[in-house]
Amino acid sequence: MEYTIKQLADLAGVSTRTLRYYDQIDLLKPNYNNKNNYRIYDENQVNQLQQILFYKALEFPLAKIQQLMCDDDYSELSALKEQQKLLLMKQQDINSLLTTIDRTIKDKQGELIMTDNEKFEAFKNTKLKQNEEEFGTEIREKYGEDTVEKSNHKFMKLSENDIQKMQEIENDMFNNLTKISADDLDSDAAKSVYEDHKQWLSYSWPNYTAEAHRGLVDMYLADDRFAKYYNDKAGKEVVQLLHDVVYHYTK
Image (cartoon, rainbow, N blue to C red; front, side, top):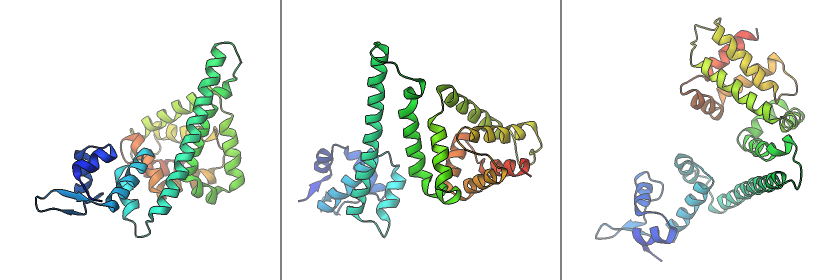
């Protein structure tokens, strides 16, 4: 069956403007343009649009969706299975949050007493899952299964005050990173960057060593995903600088 752009937009619950933009960026091209230059879509584009909307529901950026769908090894069936897996994980996170809300309501009503750890368990579980999805393979290869499991266990025991303190330390570290340059490694600000990063790691690392710290910032430098996190948080390129600071103070 064939659809005009308006028909496909109505079918999928998106705007014609969205479909025109997908065409413009080569994410979803029509099957052909008819003699009146109207975009015409067929079943293949319907299936592609469904895939795009699944990825968007999983909060994938359009650039990533395009990269995945243009890959030579892309398989619609494999993509669906992976999307199913990710959505089930997301569903588990939502169910966990709903359970926490339900227990919090009962705590407020005096029907049960929640510990401080229980109040934040769902949020910490979600954070661990996100880290595992993004960086799990690399971290486990570098530090080993036992170290990662101990680190996760320690993180799950953090209190509300611990989580807040971690955020404050990280914010202070990024603030100081924006103040220094490669020529300022002996400055107070640079030393604070090192100390903040070390302290921040101590909240989840089972044991600290200078060698492991160096290995971590090496990975930051080598992996664009880590680099993006730090650069985005700082608002400028800081990963090389953080790497150099850690090496400077772990001599």
